Length: 249
Image (tube, rainbow, N blue to C red; front, side):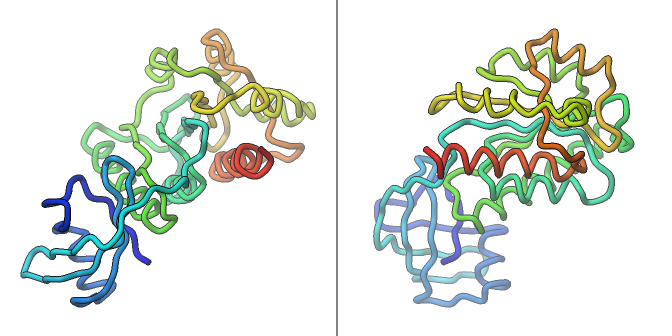
């Protein structure tokens, strides 16, 4: 059943959808009166609703049933990922959302190829937020991950004191077969803790950037014995976290 996010209901019995959601329901999904949809409120409560009215620019749906469910990672995970060429970052946003990421921070570093001015950065952010919303609906999540506007790695480091655990994926750690730090950190993390993982762009992070991250409390870690592409690494890490926190525990 198709899922949509709504801020508030009109009253206890009805919700209204307009804008992109209205267009998706009526033009893409071609739903009609009597069809059912799933909606998530800002309280994370879920409702099954039946469409009762379709107007020119909005629709009304009657709430049939409300309930709660557990669909989110028990750990608050942020991925700080280097900007990537082409549509690779779009892919990271989409798949990381499906895998349960809480927040994505695009970062610009020494070896970042993509350069964005303020206007382009804001447009990319809007695009990524739309991708995240659609992916959250498809994967039936209860929240849409937040996507920051792209920022420099220096700015990112200055803002990261709030996290309980901080890791940086470093290819040199993989080359030396370092395989304990990632797992050992996950062993320490408890429910509702926050964890941030930094992943560089194509070409990786420079030695100086890794040193700066270490000075800020980040622990370098390997992600297995193979060197992963920049768009693969965050998905590998999130998949491992999902397995560890949701299937093993």
